Image (cartoon, rainbow, N blue to C red; front, side, top):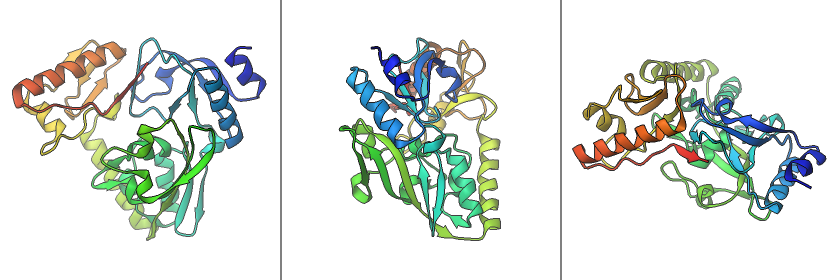
Length: 296
């Protein structure tokens, strides 16, 4: 029996040939077997079936920090469904399914009069993806509010971790070194006035609209911040704004973003990234490390 037949027989929702261009903010990527578990039991079963077939799954959030190959993703892809995306208030904390959109979590925090996530409003990823990379902006990071994380480990067991065990750092968490699936996170927030929280959220959103090329597909900031400098400043200093390869272009609005002007391929984006890295290295001596994850 094929993996597809096993998953179907287990009643786990799936899309056999889903274009990843529909599942990534870049709008780029070929097809993959997309599995959409709706609860922990389906997630546990899906991961076990994939591993049993010798095809460990790739865990997809909302595709906001990814560049997917034009040929697609060779292994099965798991994206948490609505049943694993709920957000529940518990006192001054929010218990959030990893599939929840960060924007949705921010809005629910505001409605509950809980402060601490204002800076994250406008980040297009999922909560699980945010925890995985310790997402941050405007001086805030998820590590500042994450109290504990529940995940499915390499043995197929549900575990909980907190504090130093999460190994949070700049765009880093322990999950980047493990074959785990983040399932849930508890966020510890502080009481505040809803009107003030919403005003701060709108301020951050307006800053994003003014400075970032939100009108185009992208994967967010293309490069990590190098020690002692800023990637966008280095790219700008090298006169690379507007540099293009096919449909991929260094944004003229924000040099830290590579955008999909329309019809860009993953190959074109990779070529442009390499050209930017080469030019910045030759002209400034800085090595730009790509923040966007390439998957094939």
